[in-house]
Amino acid sequence: MAFDWLTGNNLPQFWKNYISLFDSDNSNHHKRYVIFYMEKTGLDPKEDVILSIGAIGVTANAIEVGDFFEIFLIQEQFDTQSPALDKYVKETGTEKVVEAEAMIQFLNFAKDAILVGHNINLDIEMINQALKRLDLGRLKNPIMDTNALYLRWKELADTTQATLDELSDALKIKKSDRHTASGNAYVTALIFLKLKTKLGI
Image: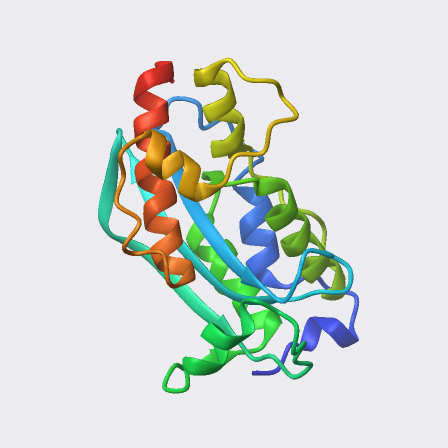
């Protein structure tokens, strides 16, 4: 796929469509949350890259059937020390796309939803770095972190870092689906819905 805007001054249409979603007051419509999880080569947003993204839409306190997103990125610089790499390499039958196409598809899916993830700041920064490589701006979506919600529920110190497994155990959620980005997104969505109810959000 050609990305002509990278050689010119015009912003791509998908980016114009995305930022326009935040120009108007949409406070009256039903809130949509997009719970997502990313497999990455590491934890450095400037040096590491995204391997895959799984995301699920939540509206009116329920997972929306069919509101689902999964994408795998072409990875040319393999880090043999990456814990996510083995799972990624095994996805041999899955079509992979370049980073630019992945960002287009993810933003088209997310739209103006509230983005939800576990320890989400790193994932947001990974996406922002990918957008920066495309000469675009930063994400505009509001964000929520399941770790922060869990600490609020348990009245724990803000510096506490709970794992997704710990949250699953505390909320009695099965962890059997935790083997892909989409599986982890689904588990995170279940965690989010339980915490949302417990906190009255």
